[in-house]
Image (cartoon, rainbow, N blue to C red; front, side, top):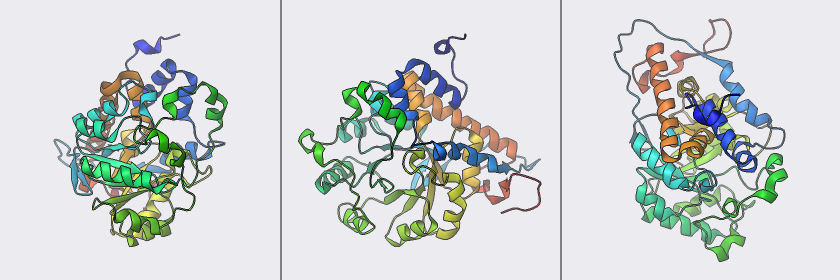
Length: 356
């Protein structure tokens, strides 16, 4: 049998296998698991097979330009790091390593509300960064986080709206007895306030107005799948939305993110930017989402596998691998910049003839 730890991964899927080989099973499962029967987790990957790219030839591009802007922030590629909790489970540098890697790659890092590193420490090493917020039952915890993030230079606030409670992860339940303390310790919550740091099932659209009183930062809502929710988000002043099913970790049998994307883009009709996460592993995955109307994609599990395997350099390697795949695939597809990655680049799987 090959010794995986001696093999340098050449794609994001191999980074997952390398992480599996080195992490304790209970830690690997925390990251890899999805809700219940994993229907949505699998659907996120399967959705990419419903689409094919339609390349154009002899376009004369000698290079490709991956730069774009997201909520007014220029980034080097249409790939960002999604918010993920307690990253020190995977590497002792945790969020510090991930934030530094994103800075080196020229993209945005999103700090999770349930991070294992403080807002202040991450801000000291990050490039452009966003802060993710949960609406906890104790709203003062949420208020404190927003104000600290704004004071330390966060450029946007990402509110995750798909978590009035937590999905059930059965693989994690089997191994919970072996969890390290860092799995349930949130660096940005005062220890005495931890009892209030639970998700509030009473949260609703009116809470967005409350959050807007706390900060002038642009607000992004993460966890939108229904086109009507997308419309409401922009009605309430969101600058962008993230089409997301939480990586298949919340409601099982929820629609795949990519399957939801076209209807959400159509419903919002340019009222704000649409981002997406869920199942991205290849450059062609990224291009399919962009062609269907996403502004950029947010990467979750793959960068965590890079973190586990190689710390900051591992996260950077994952970002650079995916960036290089996108650039190569654009060149092969006859596209020279982000503005050329549009609906003309994508068709449904099957005989050519009916473009959407």
